[in-house]
Image 1 (cartoon, chains in turn purple, brown):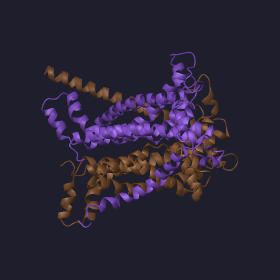
Image 2 (cartoon, chains in turn cyan, blue):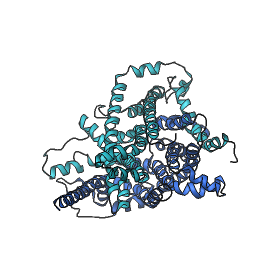
Image 3 (spheres, chains in turn yellow, red):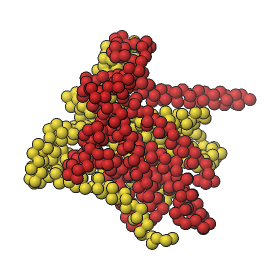
Amino acid sequence: MKFPKLSAPTLLLLPAIIVLAAVIVLPLLFSLYSSFTPFRLTKPESIWVFIGVRNYVSVLTNYEFWAAFGRTVLLLTIALNAEMFLGLGLAMLVNKATRGQRILRTLMMFPMMFSPVLVGFQFKFLFNDNIGFVNNALQSLGLTTNAIPWLIDGNLALFSIIIAEVWSSTSVFAILILAGLLAMPQEPVEAARVDGCTPWQTFRYVTWPYLMPFAFIAMTIRSLDVARAYDIVKIMTDGGPAKRTELLWTLVGRTAYSDARMGLANAMAYISILLSILFTVYFFRKLAAARQQIGAEW
Amino acid sequence: MDKNSSHRLKRRWLKVAHFIGLFLAMLVICLPGLWIVLSSLRPTVEIMAKPPVWIPRDISLDAYRAMFGGAGQGGIPVWEYFRNSLIISITSTIIALIVGMAGGYAFARYKFKGKSGVFLGFMLTRAVPGIALSLPLFMIFARVGIIDTHFAMILIYVALNVPFTIWLIDGFFRQVPKDLAEAAQIDGCTRWQAFWQVEFPLAAPGIASAGIFAFLTSWNEYALASQITRSVNSKTLPVGLLDYTSEFTIDWRGMCALAVVMIIPALTLTFIIQKHLVSGLTFGAVKG
């Protein structure tokens, strides 16, 4: 080996570190500073006033913030579990298909090609109470006579948003789990079958442990993508009706841009980022454990 | 004999169930998109009709003609948005892949101090949503004077994509056994040659899929683009899509047409790259 052991990885990682420092870490330090000021977009000089943790105190004692927090966690939990379950099923179905796998795989990735903005508009269109596909179909099939206010009723609106989220992101799970299925050696499965395992046992004790790292990768990616919910929610309901679908990031966006209270919004953002980081660390540790379990080197 | 035939029956039943399951799943996945395509071809009267018109009577390309024809007079400069999106997404994907390959290789093949920490640090940068990043970035870029340029957007998207590409590529290099590269080196390859001729081809499907993810992220990103892009110079399609609704009341047909225009390149690219996704991982040295 030509390079001394320590310098090679440093050299390889340097470009990534430089880019991330310039575009993400430095701006973040800047916004961290501004979260300790009463900074408003309309008053640029307010960036120089230091008010300590007052922003954080007012965020943490704010009922609206905690309501949005709870709703975000609820959305995240339901959506991630549904996506995980459906994605696994979809990957297994596609993997089992003997013909047309390539077409199926392309179709499977279809929702991922939709930007969140598009998903939002699409479901706003489909769930429209007057001209939407869903209501039209229900009425034509005679299941209901009146128009269901999908996006106007508070509980239904959150449900509609979850549907949109699940539709758009199940394929992330499916693709990654399918990649795991394709990369998985076949011998253990065959061995398990020869040894008399039922299909369920084979899946539970042989296939699943192999897929777990891939599932956790998908989990981590998705849990960090709660921000995606911003675009979708923004377009479908804009936090309405009566703030019944307000999530953390729409609240941050509203505080920052509509109310122009940037300092407060940054404080809110930092608390929300902390939440995301907790999720990441949690799934990251699960990932490491799962990798260890299948004997991969860490 | 009886056992045989019941087994055969069960098999056939499973096959039918599998087919139905697959069909239903694909229907749910495709129907919303097909509905959008169909709606873009129908006149507004038919979309709004009550009771609904299920079988389209009047199919035309008017929406597309209006979109690409009427630039300047209230129309949206779709061509420019399209070009911006393409330049920004492709360039940032390529750079992110190069940076990501270097980083992923370092994580997969070298042991060094604080590896876990650095890796976790990279991932944490992804915890920052676009909305939180948008304002400080806007102020800094405005100071530097690169607001509303392709360069700014490419820089942002490279940074957004690098952690994820590193993560994916690390995983795929990890699946290529170390012994292969070592064997190649014993046979007289340099480490550089061993990488390009042995490890890279085996990891290529993974790298391709990382590329797809990176491209789609850049192509679809909205929160940051809506702040950093200001004009025709660098506005991307997702931002342009919102132009559409602010200038008129929601014109469903026009929206649908632009949505179709946004989907086509993503669809094509995914389809081209996909070939590589299938081939490499399943056969060859990894298995044998």
